[in-house]
Image (tube, rainbow, N blue to C red; front, side, top):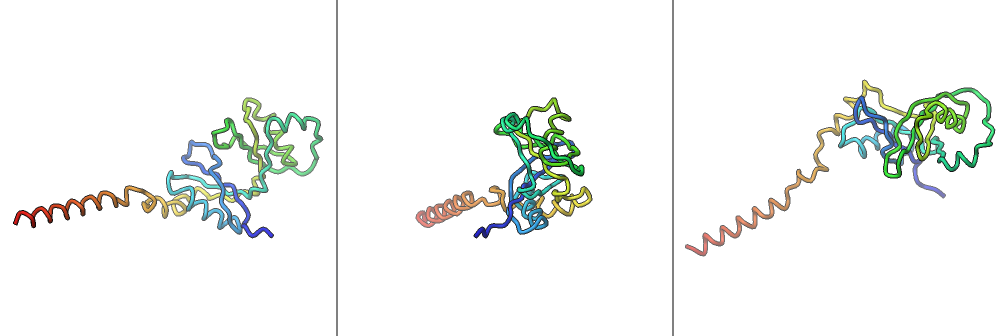
Length: 182
């Protein structure tokens, strides 16, 4: 029996002119708690203007090799939906947003992405329905992120323990020296 909460992928935009990029994952019972967990885990530093969470099972991924092997696959017809398109362009890079397409299925969304963004050649594509995304609104940016912005408890400089210990040792040594000279 699996007792772990569902996994959510976390996407973050650091600035208004920056792309939305995949930043990691969190586990939570629902999207709202995933958003709060993501804020606590990923947005302390650096700052962000947007944060998205997407259930991991809503993301459809295809590598270039998988696409080449499935070239003959028939695409199912159905109602169109809006899909976000992300690509991973090197092994060390984060998956970043390429754009958005309309498609009838995740596989059709990948094919639409290839056609629409022909100049892009990622190692693999990620697509997911826009309806699966929980994202903060721009009007929420200040209340969403300001509470964590100035928290310094994770900053090593806030805990000058070594410096304090040296100062106490020096004080103790100076005190002994003064007593010995009396």
